[in-house]
Each structure stands twice: as C-alpha cells, then as structure tokens.
Image (tube, rainbow, N blue to C red; front, top):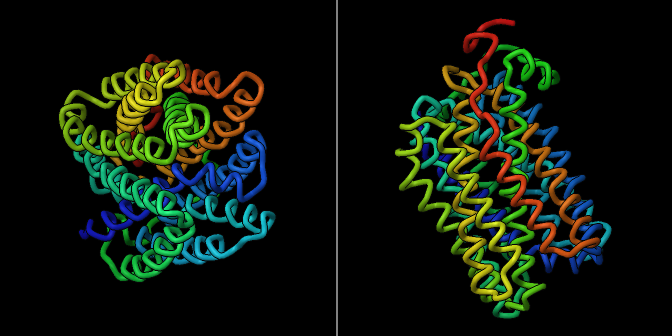
Length: 380
C-alpha cells in the first residue's frame, strides 16, 4: 500500500486552496463582482463539487481510488490551466465554477483512499490531513509573494496545473488503498444511505464544520486585506500562520485527540474555532484579528478528519459513506459563501464572521457520534 502519491495529492491540493484564500480578493476584482455576487458564484461552484463528491465516492467503490484520482487530477489540471489563461470575466467565471466543481472528485478520491488506510487509527488520520494544511501554507505564501512583487496569482495556478498532470499519471499507476474495484455502488442515493446508517446528524455537523473552515480561510483573509487595510503582508501572513497552526495542531494533537475519541476532539476543536472567529469579528487591530484567524483555523482543522473517521469506522471500503458525508459536508461550502456574503453586504463583514462563530459553536455542542442502524459494511 503506497501512501506517497496521497501525500503529494494532499500537498498539491492544499497549495491550490491556500493560494485561493489569499488571491480571492484579486479574483473577485477580475470577475467584476460584488461581495454578494462573488459568494453566489462560489456557491454554484461548490454545489457542483458536492454532487461530484457523492458520485466520486461511488466511482471509487466501483473502479478503485487510483483510477478515479489519477483521471480527476488530469481533468482538473486542464481546467486550472484554462482559468489561469482566461482574461474575459464571463469566461473566467465559468472556468472558476468548473475548476472548483471538478476539484470535488479529486478531494473525495484522496479522502476515500486515506480513510480506507487510516480510519481505524483516527489520530494518524488527523495527522495525515496536516499535509493539506502544509500545502495550503505554501500556496498562501506563494501567492502573497507573487502579489507583493507585483505579479499575478495566475502563475501559481499554472504551476499547480503542470504538477497535477504529472501526479495524475503517478496515481493511475500506483497501488493506493481501496485501489481495486469493488461493488457496483449506485451513483445516486447518498441521502438514503445516510438515513439508513443514522449518520444524518453527523453529516450536518460535518457540513457546518466545512462552512466554518472554508469561511475562515476565505472571508477571514478577505477581512484582513480589505476591511482592516492590513495589506497583502498581514493578510497573506495571517493565512500562512493559520495554516501552519492547523498543520501543527493536526500533527501534534491528532494522536492524543484520536486516542480519546473523535467526539471529544470535535468539541474541543470547534469550540476553539468559535472563540477565534469571535476575536476575528470583533478586533479593531489587524494583528489581533490575525490571532483570531489563527485560533479559528487551528481549531476547526481537527473536525474534518475526525468526523470522517467516525462515519467510516469499521469499513474496509468506505467510498460510498465518505462520499455521502462529504457531499452533505460540501453543502456547508455551498451555502457558506452566499450566506456570509449576503450578511456582509447587509450588516458588514464582521457580522458574517460572527455567523461563522455561531456555526462553530453548534458543531462543538452537537452530538457527533450517532449510532448506526446497521453494522459496518452490512448489506441494506
């Protein structure tokens, strides 16, 4: 079982999303959209990614993670490259939607593979996810350096596209966890699966955690750059530090949290994220807001892998369940940009960040360990 291609995939995916968090304000300007319009466009894109998650999980079960991940990486690379070269706002908007939607297949294939390998050791699974945060820190720093030097964020996307093609070829040939084809899982029916296994509440908590994680990365940095006039140095620096804190938290605390059970880890991480979001929303000084960003990013980073570990515990082939939970989880990414964008337009971005704090607080207190109606891998 080869985890090295998964390490590279998590790192590269993180580079893209870390760079996106810092470049969001520049992409918004390139699209000639308001904050609310930008949020709506992201919601459309993430709705596509949610659908891709549900279908991608079933495809991983049908044909194996290696074929799905390799093919998805190469298709995603074409879209990233095309978006990086497009100047027309309408064309760029369409390609941003397609790029983010196709990223959903990459995301789910990576997660199915690593969850199949490490779900029975939640601490190791949390620590493995730190690779994404490390890549995101590099991506945020890279875009920050490009913008600081008067260059375009598009150069990072070109580099990501080239590396994704190479990595896609590697994944097609690699022996990944759950890499062999299995049952002919249905491409639809994710919600029915969650109801049957009594994982609906866990999926809702997952969705809110996703909303907070994506919202902190996107709107937190946007707040630093635009509302507090911190400039690219503090804005990008806050994102880099936040990602590094998340990396350190997952590596150092992951084994301890995993040994005590996913539910307690989710409560602790989401609670810290709520505190950080409140600090970010109420700060009047950029440096204090950056501290809040760090706390929120570090805390919420614990939730995603722990909730996946809980949902897929005892399953040798977790593709359908991980796909179903992730599809609902992406719902948080879908509604988050629009809701926060609308709140920001009507009441200010501080109020939007306050909404993220409330979402994190709910995740912290919501039960995250429901009982299943069926044993793991049982037939319906």
